[in-house]
Amino acid sequence: MKTFFPENTSSRDLHHIMLGTVIPRPIAFVSTIDSKGIKNLAPFSYFNAVSSLPPKMMFSISRKSDGSKKDTLINIENTGECVINMVNQDMVRQMTIAGFGFDSEVDEFSKSGLNTINSELIKTPGVMESPVRYECKLDRIIELGVQPGECSIVLCDVVCIHVDENIMEDNKIKQEKTNIIGRLGGTQYIKINKENIFSALQNRKTVPVGFDNLPKSILQSEILTGNEIAEIAGLDSLPSKEEIETDYSSFKQFDLDTLHYFAQMEIKEGNIRPAAAILMVGEYLL
Ligand SMILES: Cc1cc2nc3c(=O)[nH]c(=O)nc-3n(C[C@H](O)[C@H](O)[C@H](O)COP(=O)(O)O)c2cc1C
Image (tube, rainbow, N blue to C red):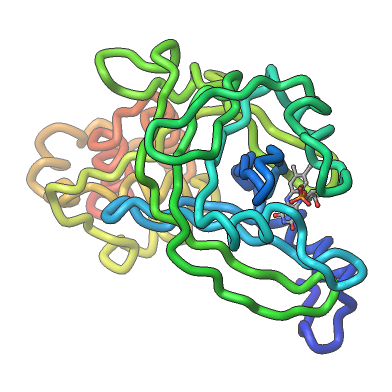
């Protein structure tokens, strides 16, 4: 492990480490209007939903290289509102155009070729092409610094949400249909699709056994991975000695590693209890 202390690390390196490792980051594509009504659009990936009850979101806006405020921050301070538009893969290049530092009187909707759509509860329009739009009112701005690169955190109340029905089924969001993208470091992005979504399930109705209650023969396995051992630790109980003697005695002809290979195959098939039983043969019968 390489260790970094912020006080001895350049801001450039800190930026590089944090953007490259806190990944993927969602992107708030924020639309605002200025006091003259000029529309503004810019992406921010220091962004997240921070509360569902009440629904709140935050994103962070850094100061420009001369220490001045970005247009988005000025506009939100003036109007107290914004729309957070989610970005899908179909609009990613248009989003990067809007991310260019145009002068404040430039309308980034026109520059990026994206269309406006009126909001329900606020004056600021959203991005028509976006699959999900959050109409927001400003809760507060937390200023972390005023020097170049230093950030202000914008905390918003979500007052209205629009979701494209094409990404829903039976009133539920189908995540693989959203096509929403996340930001990695530099110019790289990641898309959400069926191939890269997986489940990590823990039964929440029963108390998991936990690693601390597993026998050493399982914990010190040369075969099983941490995730595989966690499948066993996630069960609500381990098979009893009687269960093993009755149903699994034929397994005692195998050595420990072979038992662990068998158990691993069962885990891969999702047969966690039989896997636990095979592993416990090593404990009770060898
Ligand atoms: C994908 C992406 C993510 C970005 N994330 C941030 C961010 O979290 N904070 C920030 O200050 N700037 C971020 N930027 C840069 C701003 O979008 C850029 O400075 C923009 O010009 C600000 O526009 P404005 O002056 O109209 O507010 C990001 C740019 C891109 C392309």
